[in-house]
Length: 161
Image (cartoon, rainbow, N blue to C red; front, top):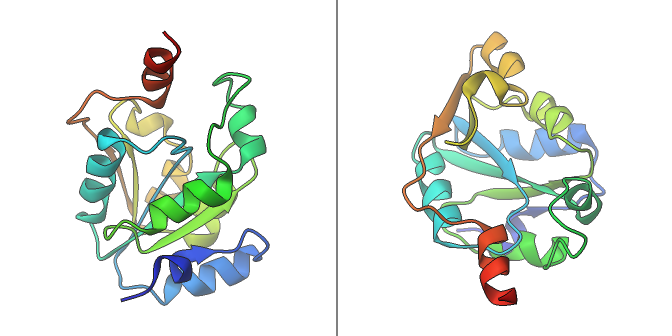
């Protein structure tokens, strides 16, 4: 079993190096992405469900700058990228974690070209970034219903009040 440190793919890696690294993982490959600022039960359950679709799960994580551009608030992310990646990598259901600096993970998705692309139930399949590309390559796109209604934003609102 890989250590959590070994699961983190350096942000300085080229897309080709990321693709090569993820191709060594068991197949079929599942990809999902998000900010994962304050990891909560909803995230963990969702990631476990995503992993169960295939043999390995790669998680794309928005860089700090990318999170700031998502209009989540001026104080976000609460946790820096390295911390968010380390926490995700410590989960047994996660096989690799890689950051992306763009607003969307499209370049990362097209480089990795997973067999399964997964997002949470708040995403319509037709709106999932990279969905058309994955489907055109013979892959499947999934929108997983939430089992637990949790959000980092609501957790932060509760803390602030």
